[in-house]
Image 1 (cartoon, helix red, strand yellow):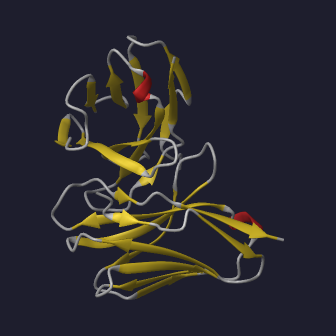
Image 2: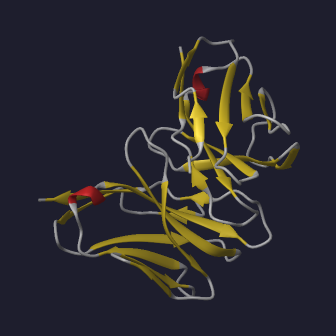
Length: 113
Length: 113
């Protein structure tokens, strides 16, 4: 049973470009969560999605960030007009149901030059 | 405001001895707690969890203790092994609240041979 998949593992962008991060949940999981980890910090919750629905985006910055989890395909975290402060590790987690244990992917390390 | 605190950034323990990692929380709405282990450049791996209706949960070498009145939990690893060297994150989940986990900043456990 494959785990949570994330790609790319590393992403380099220049200021002002767009970053697209992909997450495929574990087989049988329909709940996806995105977290961000800044250096020397813990993971911070950003958004929780089910298929075609955003359930909780209380941790998502109001501007430039968006997330989706379409009926088919992976969940996408999109960051428009990236700035240096967006440089971080972005982790996706999935669970089979709400309030079940979340299992994490390997993360995407975004570097903004 | 740090709702989950891991006050020891690092901990060094001799191989074969007991490792004790501590975590304090401030939000009384947290009712489910998890420990994750993380190696560099990888995603967090779920280790063990505990519900607020229990005060202890054991899984092999790992035991988590919860003291609700003190809002404190700890992870015991015995005996400690070299492969246990990693960063350990404490995470908490509130009942009926946001669906994202709240993480501490982590404790870097180093097992000395």
